[in-house]
Length: 292
Ligand code: SF4
Image (cartoon, rainbow, N blue to C red; front, top):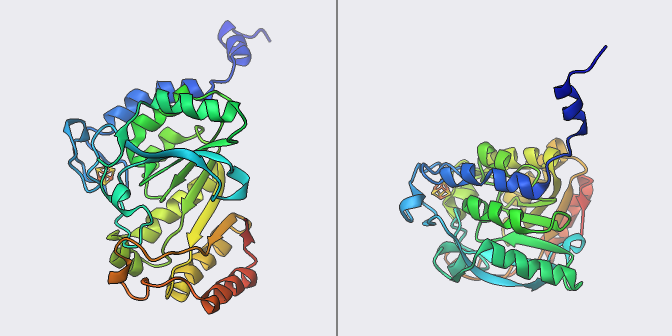
């Protein structure tokens, strides 16, 4: 059978690189801000005209931190970490409270400029990967696309997210980051609503976790909170053991009471030894794959 010219061309065409994919999706990412449904809140705000939705973010993000970090999961450090101001959650215990809650903290930096700094750090051997975090980075979709489009094709790119992105946004980000670190903060909707003003949390984050597990390298992160081992960690761990057995789980024990945590006793104190022991017993019983 004689192949058509189109069939021959399809076979010989090089796969589209990550940079090109990001560049080609930039218009789509920018238009998404016009009626913003980038996250679970689905405000419908026009962010191209300025801050208008629940997150208070406009079209361009500010950067509040850009530095080498070594305190994250072992497999991604040292990382050149870039933190974008603004978030779509309102966690009372947020470690970066002011910068995360207020998107105008920090400074405007071009994505290409950040890419240049990160590439230089990776090139000099100071960092193994670029880590993008917040606040919440996915609410700044066009900037993320610009960043990926400006990074070297082979650089290891890591996205740390709270998992509230919608399926349309995940599709735009598909194939652009090597690793997604997804925070699974709360094990039930009542705690999520009380402590982060987020309704329907477990359904939204569950969707993202399932998507990420089948589209990228996934690390599920859970910060153990004092007084929330039974109501938050245990059900989160059970969900993981049922839906994503074998997934990498980063169980963080370094909770520190900060920002508005004092308004939510017992979040006004560090985790105690008994709680850490109980949390580890849950992980062991459920055979979770903990990673350092
Ligand atoms: S990112 Fe989320 S919170 Fe912010 S405007 Fe869009 S839908 Fe609303």
